[in-house]
Image (cartoon, rainbow, N blue to C red; front, side, top):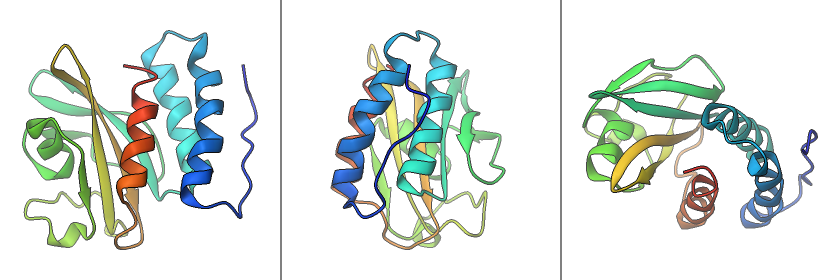
Length: 157
């Protein structure tokens, strides 16, 4: 098991993901506990990509419940279809929001959050969890993030 994160600071976004994914694979390879794997993934993304916030929300009954995360204190529960996370869950698709203040039903867990990407962990056509990443910069997420974050989710779903 890898216990140290190794990443150069002068890499492009894509190069950082390509460096982190093998390390994530090593972390989750021999562990079958979903929460443990989510916790390590949050840490790798938070420190390796310098995100403002990275975390998982787990689907429990008709709401998303806060799971492992790194960053400031977060919203504990999110209703189906509410906010960026609830909307991604409802639509079963990745959402990239360049400016959260322009998203019609954004839930402001932190006023410092400026942009967001949310991806769904889907098994048997049912959303099991969402991966939520926030940035304190506008327009910080793109197709590169979506591609590699999806690859990371697929390692634990």
